[in-house]
Every structure is written in structure tokens, then in C-alpha cells.
Image (tube, rainbow, N blue to C red; front, side, top):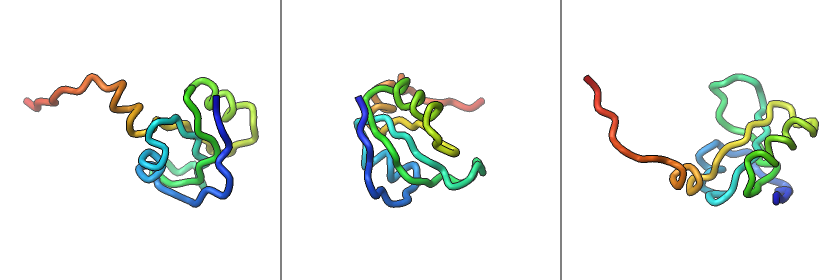
Amino acid sequence: MYRVIENSPRMTDNEARQAYSDDYILIQRESINSLEQSGVVLYVGDDFSELFALQVDLPVAHGVVKEGRNISRRLSLGGLVVGA
């Protein structure tokens, strides 16, 4: 299930992940530049595949599906990274 976000302001990935922390987020980037980490949130939902299909089926230029903060933490295995 997903919902449309009307009149969403431009926000960074971190702002979007905090605002929609329990959802997957479809963000429309303003450019294809990989260093540009901001855009407009178009849809949020509880199914990654559904939002990814929307990105493909609809004319969402430069669309990216991101995980909300709580989802990415819930799926993380955690742990420490130790350098040699």
C-alpha cells in the first residue's frame, strides 16, 4: 500500500528518512548527478517493490526508492567495522 505526498518540499535524503521513518520513500531527484542527495518526495509506502514498480511505470524522471530510518535500522545486522 502506498500514498501520494502532495506539495512535498524539496528535502535531503536524511530529512526524508526522518520525516517518513517507517516507510519506503520514492524521491524524484532534480538531476542524475549522484552527488545531489536531495529531491521531492512523491510517494511513501510499506512495500519496496510496489514503489519501485511505480518508478518504472510512471514518468518519474530520476526516481529513487529509499528506506525510512526505522526500516533500515530494523533490517541492519549491526556490528562493528574493524580496520586492519
